[in-house]
Amino acid sequence: MPPFFAHTPHFGVVLMLGGVALVFLCQIWLCVVAARRGFLWLLGVIFLPFIGFLLPFYDERALKPLLGTVAALWLTGWSIMGVDDEPTRKRSIKEKVYLMKQTIRSGEMRSETLAAWQGRLQAWQQNLEAKKATLDPKNPAAKAAFDRELQDYTAELTRFKEETARASL
Image (cartoon, rainbow, N blue to C red; front, side, top):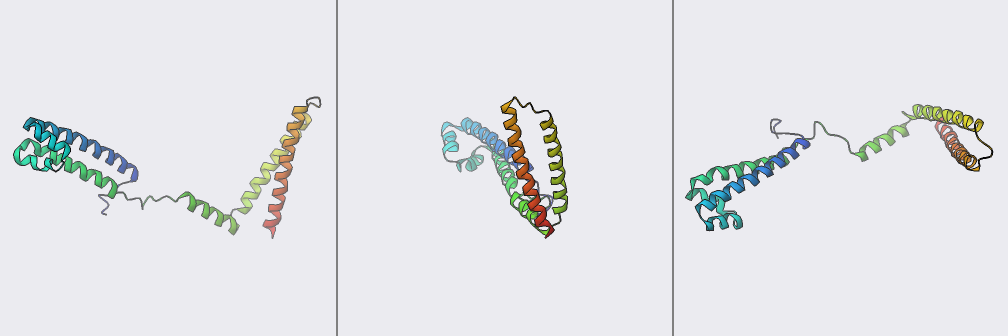
């Protein structure tokens, strides 16, 4: 499709809504013209849509709403067919996850990730030491919460050690 006619998907939605609204308005206008021509013409336009194409041969006032309807239908079709997302193509989540896994497996990100993980664990350890210093031994709920957090920290530290051992291989 020529670049002049191409548009983004978001603009395509706007075009489609505009085209549908224009079709609706032009069809109402066509029904008004048909009603002025006669009640049977109105029924024909409502229930047999091809009658709208015959009406301009009998009443020239129907030509403008008919051409408006055709233009609106073209606009609605262009809203779908003119979408060109290749220049601004974004990767799907599946593609991003696959590329991230490949990057991690190749080891390009591993050293930065491990360093950040180690920094987070050191900050957590300091936070735990500060909590232990201010822990009230008479409060069993606080002691239980501290013990749970300490178990979480120990489990995370074990996983970190396993990962660093695997990374050094």
